[in-house]
Length: 318
Image (cartoon, rainbow, N blue to C red; front, side, top):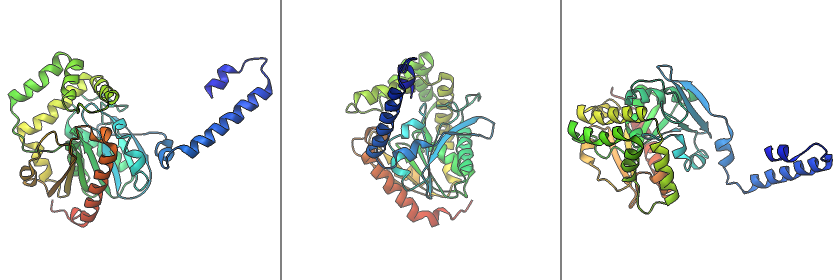
């Protein structure tokens, strides 16, 4: 260990080195005993890199075994770390995959436009690289749109989608003026504007340390990537593509949402094969981090609902 290397000096005794190594071995043994079951296997393997369709390197991690594979897709200006409270839990029974979309985390930043379709290609590349035969895609926030794009690309693998605090109204009547007002503060001063934008989605009761970490982390995202992704995502509500993509994927959709915004069930069901929602009372946009136990229980329920419907999910009409 590094401490041994820096503490051990020329002239030190062999006995000191031997005792030190023995102590480290004992410490390691007791750490193995006290860590919760599943934590070490979840993070033991090195990350992987695969190439998206345009050649952009996409970083991902896979752990656990069991079908269906759960592929977790983060939201705008986030990355795979936002699922850290889910990986150890769900990898006990499933293969769990987390990834960094292009321009996020440790993935490549070579694109000029960060479209939802290109993010869908990132997810497809990872799904194919893992060799998963049956997949449930789980997407937070912007990730809800991304997983719909990915499902369109790999219909033979995906049996259902789970959106996390997203897809509350895929018919939302966005206007050009509203989009301009939304993006203007981010263009003027991205760090300040993004902190204000994201801060409105976090509950006042959220742990202050977690709140500050989310705000600091997301406001440190590359502005060019974040602005492009925001424009591309919200422009789909101007064109109607946010709804139309679901008409091309005949699989069930379930969301696990907080109660910050109302859900338009009728609008969603006009375009989706089927739609249901599990709503956590008094939960905010980052419910998988702020309310991990409640969220994990709700996510387990959503997974079970999709597994029960999987024969329907595999019946394609497109």
